[in-house]
Length: 358
Length: 81
Image (cartoon, rainbow over the protein chains, first blue to last red):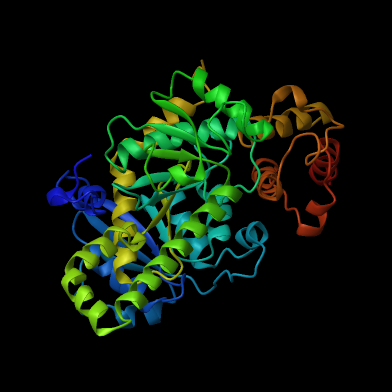
């Protein structure tokens, strides 16, 4: 795959530019949880304002007086809904989602359920967002478990990776469903026309893996709804982009995601320290500076904003907890893309209880 | 509402909302061990039962509902009262 201007990799813009195309004549209303995340509400509101427009209207949910204080005079296409409560990081997600009906997450998701909004974005407690989505927005009929699908900035181009945290334990059938939903996500949100699917395991052979992974391999290989199943892939194949979509359970996915993020940070940190080591290396660094910046941007997950909880009746975007304005703006645009694309109808059609499996 | 009707309603919720295999749903079936539901599923079940039967279930009461039979019995006491 050719990259930008002959580089051996592409930047996230390859995927995200399509999210900013809003000339489809549709008005999409995105709810943004203004109370969730480390940088709430300031950076959340800033990010929402960066994405807002006539075709992308924002409903900010949280402490209304505080939010209104951050909005410029006469701002258009933005409304505010008051939600006095917050679900803390230490609260049991399902219980809190049921009990705290005044929290920004629950109030926001109810707006979507009631038809007053089309998508939801939050940088808050991931477990609570997942639980509240299941309870209030509900799964598309036929979907057994939703999955958190993230976009990894791999080489030479981004890949989809799911599940990265919604389900610590899975059954083979869930993995098959993740493959179908991941395929739809890659087509509709990442604009990859014929995505290849890989099942993460501890060896290439179909006999390698846990009993559920081995069974999932057989289910996926036999399933006509999955167009291009590559087979098993291993951890090292994720960043090398052997396939477009990598399927795994939430525990493995979460560990994998954080391992990759930590490794990238450690390597880039060591590279920076090397450059700063001496006059000679600093000179070398100066020559490489612009190109290293391009590489750094290509590897920056903030550019994608967050991950999509696939399988729900509306797009739910889980933004990174430490998201700043740019990340939130991108998360909002991903939410819009999820709403206007064929993502939800495709999942409904392929996983609907009337759909045949083989 | 008869016991059988309540059972059919609860079975319906389990099959349609929680994607549980219909064959596995018996009065003796345990939610966690036999129907493989997790904590989120159980909260969803409780909330759907509240909507469907027009009753309220507290967290303490929900914690005591371990089998399909428990759920049916609970609804029977609430709906009769």
